[in-house]
Image (cartoon, rainbow, N blue to C red; front, side, top):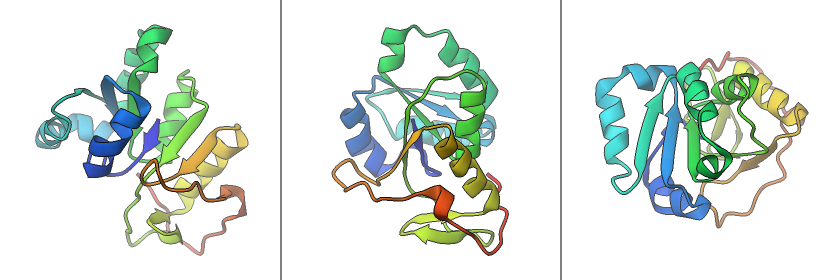
Length: 162
């Protein structure tokens, strides 16, 4: 699984899809699933892969119907840690989550280069960390994984609603 507010883009399309050996990309996000143009653009961003776009709840149902072998070749991408938590709470098993770019917004603070969080996002990351999920912040596979502990991060303000 990857958390990236841009979903499929150059870094994902060029490096991550082949790095994880994905045959299918599942984008689980309520807003994207309702956005016909955005969905079409995401599918065009990975022309050699099957791209499935679902709401988070429909994504849970979709992924639960897959067998273990099928799941090994699916790359799930969500836009925020709250959606990742919803998938886990819905019964999707994940041990490792790669964290990609999160954009600056007025309600966020930069906690690491290219990683902007509000309070709700930080709380979700802290919960993922508490559950023992390996959280791996790297923009591309060749980057070194930083020693980033979300439990040590304190924010001044901003909600960070995804």
